[in-house]
Length: 113
Image (cartoon, rainbow, N blue to C red; front, side, top):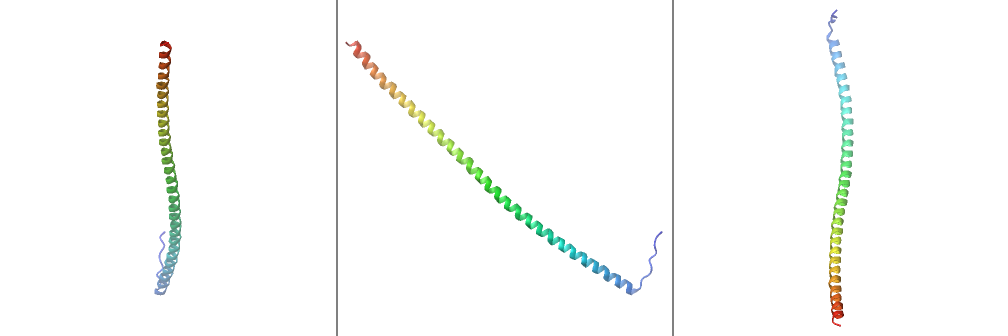
């Protein structure tokens, strides 16, 4: 059954209006306090994200430096191996040519006897 509203006097209406305004003001204060808490938490989260991002950038830079240094060392060792191989080839050719000349002189002197 629908309830019938009892007609209010003007004073009751004004009092009720003041109570509603007071309740709305209290609610607004609570909301502002909650908003300030949320802002401070967001600020703390943003600072944490920025700090961690900086750490990640440092780690990526260290990794990049390490990879490039390894590549540089690999190229240097490859160059060293090539140089060493060329030196050994020339050394062997020199020995072969030199020993071939000595063998030729020995054989020639043996047959000239």
